Amino acid sequence: MGDGSVVPKLGNMKAVLGILAGAGASYGLYKLVRGIGGNAEKKNRMKMERSGGLDIRATGDARLEPGSLMAKVSGFNVVGVPKTPSQVTAEASKDLITKSPDCLEPRHIGMLLSLLQSSPNFSERSQVLITLGNSAAFTTNQDLIREFGGLHIIAGFLTDTSADVRLQTLNAMNNLSMNIRNQQQLKVYIPRVLEMIEMSPVNSELQLAALRFLTNMSVTDEHQHLMRHSVNLFLSLLVVSNEVTQVQVLKVLVNLSSNPDMIEDIVQAQAPASVVLLCDCCTSVPVLLRLLAFVGNLRAWTPSAQVVEALRWRPDSLFCVLLDESSQLHHRLPLLLHHPDPEVKAQVARTLT
Image 1 (spheres, rainbow, N blue to C red):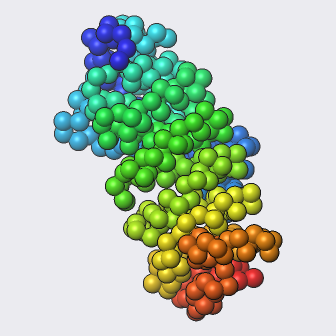
Image 2 (cartoon, rainbow, N blue to C red; image 1 turned 180 degrees about the vertical axis):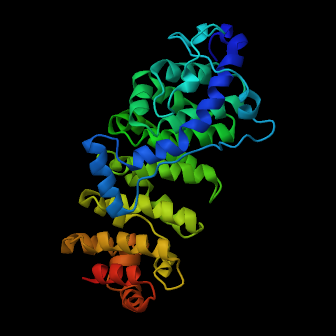
Image 3 (tube, helix red, strand yellow; image 1 turned 30 degrees about the vertical axis):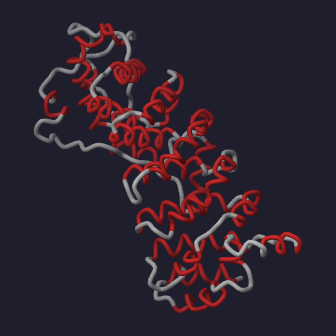
């Protein structure tokens, strides 16, 4: 991938890569949580606080594990990178090591993207993606990566032969999708990510990373229609997965059901009858709270008599499983008013009103 002339100079690039991989993660999370994005991004975060979604991930481990890339380069002098990434020399500027980790310069982002395309080594591609993903915790870097055409470069590795490269690709896309302008380009990869969820092992890190990306992409109404035909998939996954995956699935479902224009598609989806069994005191509190928020959004919908009659002809629809007057849910919800957790009781009360 790329010009072979880059290969002899990868030693210097590795040095930069090793330093950057550990530097951007924790400070990036702090800055992002503090709200360095624009007004649109702040509004989205406020919406997600209400609906239970929005995820940012720091990936990689800053510890110097024996034999790791970071351990190998930790003793090197880190050189600056000229505007043309392939022209790195030992005489280049050495000021990067003194810079604050929250301010990568454009040339550094360009170098990382160049190295990502050039490296034949899957472990190195994975490390570059970790570095880019952590740098994308900063709004400035989210914009730089987009302006350099990096969104499509990174997303191109969704089909990499290495599962770890695919995982780190999703993690990077997850942080990049915190940016509204980035979402405009990343939306074309939603079908591929949905396919990855369906094909990945249940509860795998790959599946979770894909769900986190969709959580961010469903934070506004604009791209939700691209997931309307996958509600069946989310509901099926909900009843067979563990608590961590269930929470992530429900974050997506809560986001989708917050949009009134999506409700009719959601209630028509085929649903396992066992979905209603999750409304139980034995269900974990994080899962139950999000499930009740999802149910509350559905119950706020007021369909016409004709729509209700049509939905009743499909006994396996989510409408019949959760909303119809014959559903077990109507008996289960009042019982949860005696749940020991006060948040659950409050959520049940809101759902019943």
